[in-house]
Image (cartoon, rainbow, N blue to C red; front, side, top):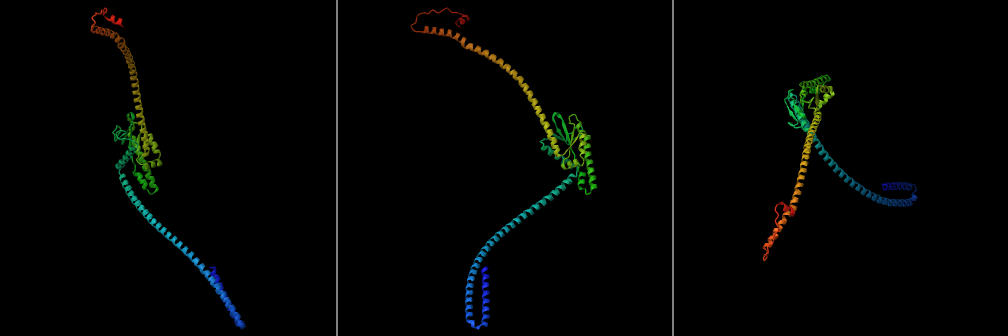
Length: 375
């Protein structure tokens, strides 16, 4: 770039010099020859320098063009990579947006199904009998989670002298614990649907009256009065939200229920109560088993004493028999063997050939005295 500027400057200076020389020549004609020579010299010098600078500028322009080409090639490569990356990002974006749209569609479908299910459940629970069946099913689920077995740990709809409770738990020593399922839902649903403060206050008060009525109804049945019953009865509300609303709206209801021997339970608190009942049953079984083991140990101790006595007696008898047997196999056997040996010797002497001499036998000794003498 500097060479181009210098070249332009030289051309401009040459033009100015030529113009000045022409003006001087017109004023002093005598100096035409020298001036012409000077102009030629200046022109030649300017042409030479112009050529030199032109070559230099051409070289610099070529180098700059090469560098520009290289930079353009690098920029083209970067642009190609950026274009590829943008296309990839665009593809990923389309894929992710497609997946997100699919998830949103599925979520919308699930929300619609949930709304339908909720509506169906609400319609089903509008019936008192349906609510009772659903509450019993919830109670059975809790009992199953607690490890209770129907017919072993509890019974359903067992008729008693006081009535027919929904569940009867079988406790140790023949005791029983009764439970009824109550689901006062109508006014609670009206409370949820209320749009004004007055409606909410009215429906909340009506719902709390329903709960107190259910507690009084269960207390009047007097399930805890039987001789084989514990001094309380369970009232199961099969919904945690409903139970929590009772506690927050009027906690005195549960305290009043306890005064009438009624224990209000939700699914979670019922599980805790059943865990205590199960632990009591297990402790009773363990205690009874321990007592049976102690009784068996006492019986074993008596039998062991008799066994030791008879064993000692048998040992003494065996020891006496062993002494008698040893005496029989030693002393008595040797006493019997000696006469037999003498008889055998006499038999050999009598049967020996050429032996005609009569051997005089010793006088015979009869009876046990002979055996005692030989012994």
